[in-house]
Amino acid sequence: MKQSTLIWTMLMVFGGLSLIFIQFNRGKGEVYVREVPVEAKASSKTSPEQTYRWSTYQQVPEKEKGKPGVSFSLSRTLGLWVAAFCTLAIFSFLYGDNPLYKFTEAVFVGVSAAYAMVVAFWTEIVTNLFAKLFPGFARMSFLPDISEDVQSDLLYLIPLVLSVLLLWRLAPKGSWIARWPLAFFIGATAGIRLISYLEADFIGQIQNTIMPFIVFDSKGSFLWIESLRNTIVILGVTSCMVYFFFSIEHEGVVKYISRLGVWFLMVTFGASFAYTVMGRIALLSGRLDFLFNNWLGI
Amino acid sequence: MKRTIPLFISAVTGFVLIGTAFIPKFVDWGNDAMAWFNLLAAFAFILGGGNLLKMQLQKISAQQPGWGYAAVTLIAFFITLFVGLAKVGVNPSVKFPEFAWSGEFQEEGSAFWWLFEYIFYPLSATMFALLAFYISSAAFRAFRAKNTEATILLSIAVIVLLGRTYAGVWLTGWLPNEPIIGSSGITYSDFHLPHLSQIIMDDFTTPGMRAITIGIALGVASTSLKVLLGVDRSYLGSDQEA
Image 1 (spheres, each protein chain N blue to C red):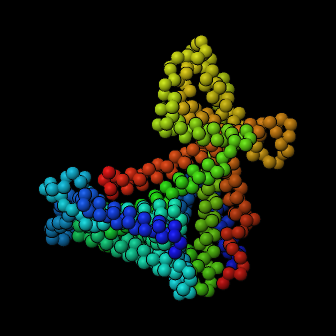
Image 2: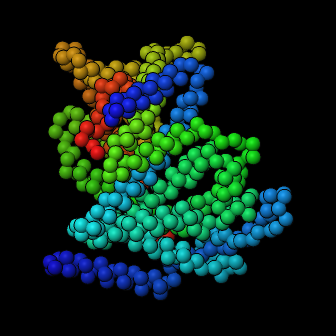
Image 3: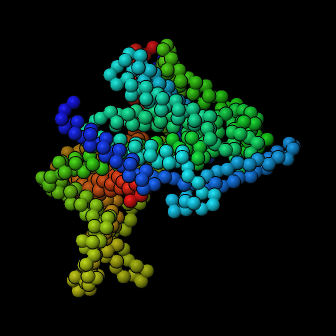
């Protein structure tokens, strides 16, 4: 191990241990919850009347510790520490690629893939496929609020078959069959997007740009600021479009107009860059706020 | 059959959906197609998960460098999948308490909620937050006012950055609200950085964004037509597939 790596590793380990020691001594980094009892009566009129009871837990600020009904939550406290560990482990990449970062990266990949699958399963497959094909079974199992009048929609066998064909991709032989659902996917995307983009973006944006160069108010007096603003927008859009028009040589007048377009685009990119940076900094401050406020309680 | 049928499916689906936009009676077809589309997208997530599983298992069985991390990925994957699908720790819905599976799968306090709140969210937010350092570092190295365009980009970025934070108020908040040239209506306070930033966003960024949006719309339309007419077949992959 290199000397610098050894020093940094020792610093990180000692830093981590001292943080844990400080936390336990100060009693910070703990989560408290209030128990909320829930009571519900059976929904079915035919079954015997029965009352069901259970409890949910609501997170409360630490200052409410000791109040009636408020208790220490081991699972959420553990979660807070796990979240702090994950945050610090990802930040450790600033020092360089290291096993701690790689470990959390691997966890992130696994959790996010499964998270997407679970959300897709409950929100789409159960709600929109299973409930449409087998409403009776869905009512008895996962979705009791489905009306008894709902009949199964056999048309949904088509997406079911297409979906099974899509999963065929994982099979060692005949993976080309997955092209059929993929073709539906691509065709549907192309059809829907073609119309929606032309309608909302192409025509909509041109419509918004068609506005008066000279603006007067209701009394007939000239509003020079509004007129200037409209003129800037119209000139800006036109010059940018001229710059994007690559079928003609950018020479003579066209060259100057397209140059103006480039300047407008540079303004747009500069503002977009500033917004991106601000977004990332806001996220960073959010994570630091979590570490210092929620975890360390400073 | 391997290429002709998919081309036919995509062309028919696409043109039928375009047609439904012009015939009000068939608007429901478009809605059905969107529902099917969402279902296929949901199954695509399962396909993605299956593919991840296949790749990680290959890595482990071949004992490739870093196979231990592949094992970690698999463990995290299976735990999340199990607690999410089995609704571990989820209470039944208050409206239907006799149905054990009627509760929301993301209910507060459940195991799946815990994984999202304390692992998924901190990890993803920190990953993106990390980019703040790299964006700043890249900007510091690459941004030089070498020509007019670069100077415009740099100065606008600085004005918007300062104008949209408290720094803008702090730096230019002292400018008085007095007219500059007679009764033109322009005052010194118009040059407050937050105000300048707003003018840039409203009047100078809008034309650029509008032109880009129009360009994107034209690009999407032409690419869609190329796909539907079978000119662009790249999505079918190669003929060598098993």
